[in-house]
Length: 475
Image (tube, rainbow, N blue to C red; front, side, top):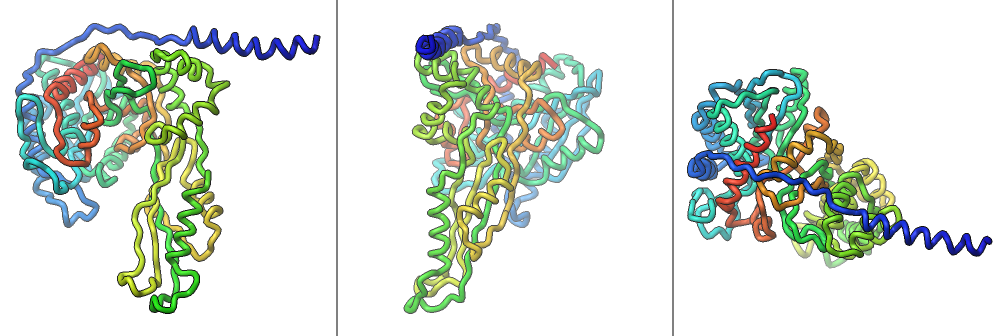
């Protein structure tokens, strides 16, 4: 009888795995496409005008062309008369805030973006601030990141007001001017909300987008909506000595000490892979659409196959792996100013992207144990913890509905953002903070963000405005 029991257990497991796989089916969200009759030429022209402002942010305030930022803010006040007629306008550092009163001040919505851009490097084929329009695209720094979403927000709200739209709840339009340098605009706006006891029900910022080839065996495009984002931390590791001439070097120098430390950190399996809630939500949503029975079997039975999925992540690398773990990237390095002089001090920088449920304090403690060298000091340049994970309830369904009414053939899905955005500051005051940029992007498009020859398709500009109008319909 005992032998039968031993045989029964694996048979039961196999049956359970097969049954769960068969029942692992997608939940289709049928929606009729809804397009709004706004002035498409105006929307495209407006983005072109926005791209002509050289709103390049910089950590060093003295290197910023403040006149360009002031001119951009003036443009927002002159180009959108209905918004400015109905909204209370305020500035917070380099950020701007429009407050449109609804029938109730409870449960307001915040639509976010930023209007600063990163510097331009060599390699552009045209003037990066031309805002050039042709029959397919609008060209310029910030076209994808992210004056396009700011333009879509303003144009959609202006159009909705022109159609007599009345909001059930207050609406805030919040645009920072220093997101690219982790500046104080967004925190200042959040402080304003705190000081006035304003608790947003829904916050929507840039983030995920519509992407292809998101998951093995899934042919449909996926609209990934960030419900959490990884934290980040920059460390500087420094070693010192008396220096001296390179002709009589000691066995150990700051460079060799740091090299050993970097090698230990690079080779140590210090950051364990973990399936956090936003990653589980992504798999639960997308995996049922896979045409591969094997893939569906793995993700329908994570209780059994999580080790296999982690192994796949390790072998895949890239963004797939980064969703599972804290990542470590060695960046800046400095030593002697002369090749024949021993450095009295040497240092290197490390950038960490912290997964949810792993804190900067835990990572620093682990680094010290791995290096195990009291002669190397560790300085925290900046640290920001991973955000909380937003709920995926009715508020999330509003964003889903806006997506499926704009793009009827995509799969909306929660996911974990591996990059950072201004909306990370809002998790403290809101349980529904989502990160989605309403555009269909290719790998080539993604390479243009912070790169050169940045542009956006006119189709994306129009669809982005339709997306916000489909969201506004629900407010």
